[in-house]
Image (cartoon, rainbow, N blue to C red; front, side):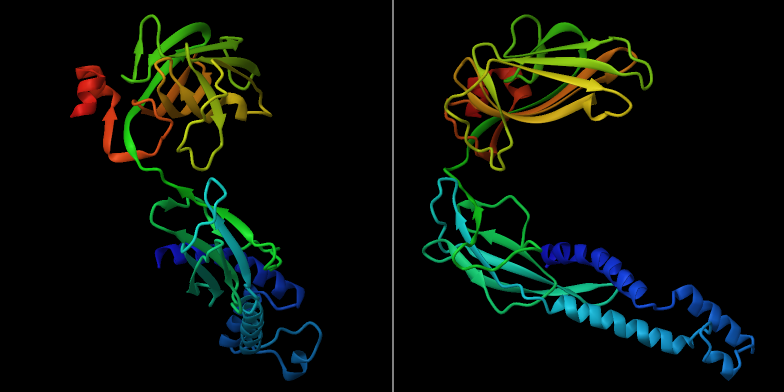
Length: 351
């Protein structure tokens, strides 16, 4: 029920705006006037009957309230009666249909200004991965998929402009697990000079090292000393000696590509009072190390510190230490970089 409440909760704010616009268009008196009218009545100063019929009169509160309630009910019923017919298809990362997947449709309903409601519909995908919901009505639809050995990591909903068509179902991709493996988890952060000095880090031990590292970062900022909102530019160069990076936006970063890695990546950024987004960036990469290990890395990098003039980096990486491109993590067999630093990779993996 929690996921249904989260889905339908978002409708309340939208509907309040919709109802307010509806009331405004049809000339309904604002709440302030109702309160003022009530205050006059309580003081024994009700308007004369002849005044009630004039164009400038204020209607009795009960009439306004009833009109307001009826307007809300009409708008609510119209929203709740919309057709939610839907046709979908589920495939895996290879394009094969996912059969017998459980599909839940959370149907959102408006109940009142203060709360929303809804109900569930259930079905399963067929031999072609297809599913449908027909004859369903409500204010919106959220979709949830589940099958053993698969994962769906996105928020799915029926688009407002969706046109039902059984011949062209909306396609959803689930990730089919190969099987989680033991991984090295490497997390570290560090300040970075902005004068072009090369900083070396070791993925496996999650630390800064002297000399040659498995990850090299160099940041140059111009001017190096920045003050207030004055514009500046900076360049970040990332390098994996003997290996490389692939930037990705994959929803399921669970399998590293076999090829296409670049040993060095360079990013240029400009910062000004009108463009503050250039202060830093967050990116996801696949990477390959010189030793033949594959991994994925989430990197946050910035160069916006004024005093002392410096930048900073924060990295979270998972590395498969067996040479496999599989990056599905077994949470019960995660080895920390700090432990490898203490006893070495082989002993840490065998614990």
